[in-house]
Image (tube, rainbow, N blue to C red; front, side, top):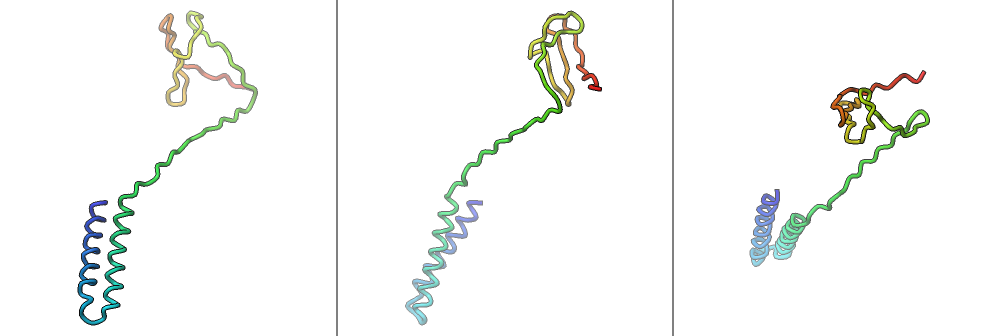
Length: 115
């Protein structure tokens, strides 16, 4: 994209110089004004092409509203009863899976209905 802008600004600058040089013939004021406008436009195009766009940072924040009281519980393995660490719990496809580090048992945690 910048290459195209540089080529167009070069052509515009050359056109501006042609108008200024050709001002010796009739309508000198009009040709000088057009030449200066073309040169100015070429300079502005190069300046805008060299400017870097400002970097923007997007922060995504999620808020979770729970329907009832929530308390932290210690999880233990269904098979051997050993306490489970955060490494033992994995969430995939919206489902909580447990892989016991002690006995190697793997199972899915199912939430009991609240009614």
